Length: 320
Image 1 (cartoon, rainbow, N blue to C red):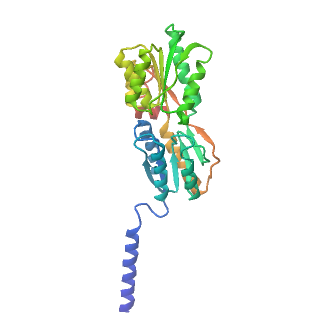
Image 2 (spheres, one colour):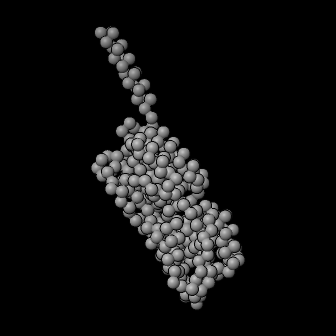
Image 3 (cartoon, rainbow, N blue to C red):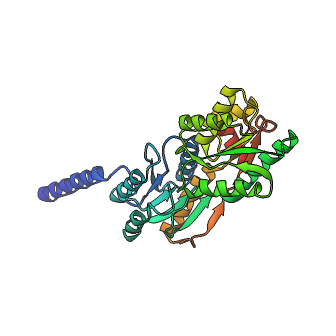
């Protein structure tokens, strides 16, 4: 009897020790990583919030947001490889460009990792993509600028265009949509300048555009837009500035009339729907067909910024 009790006690201790050795995430939890382009923009913070909301609802996900400190292909590839090595079951990826990550994504897929794109896809099959229709949104930005210029009586002139780089699909598509609006007009869109989305670099480029006599400047992402607005404000210029994304800084520049408007995306929706799609694919309830869902944009202007809340988080809720 004593031997039996001793064996039972030892078994209980062993069981407790084993339980304590289990990682913080449960064995039946899915490990899902969000890998964004960088850590600089409020856009990614809002996407992270959407992911966390979905994780809270689902309750069976161990979630982590990771990203390079700046936009860099090698650093993003390293993030993908680290996620796979860390036991990722799924990765939500905002790809820097269409091709750089492909080899790393193939290795991840071979390891059984599900891929979902948020914001910007790569040229590799995925469960699903949740992103803005960037060509359409860029066209809307162009239409807003063209109308504002015509309302001022300006029918010709130079227009500056600020982009992150020549490889990021989402911003390239925004540029294409924007340019299409001015195709049959007397306006001249100057050669695109690249800043990697850095606000300080963007400000320098926008200042140069202003000095060249541009009548309008378009920034294709948050950093480009902030730089454009700051340059216009510092110069005291009446250049028509149109941008992309939403942050408290951008909304402030719209409120004071420095920027005409911004195309506000819904990154929270991308993150929320991306997590749900990844879990559905892992559960086998919806393996995904690789389809793309347009998560939409809202045009934020001085006329409606207050009604939408006046801060990035409030605008995000209203635009959703």
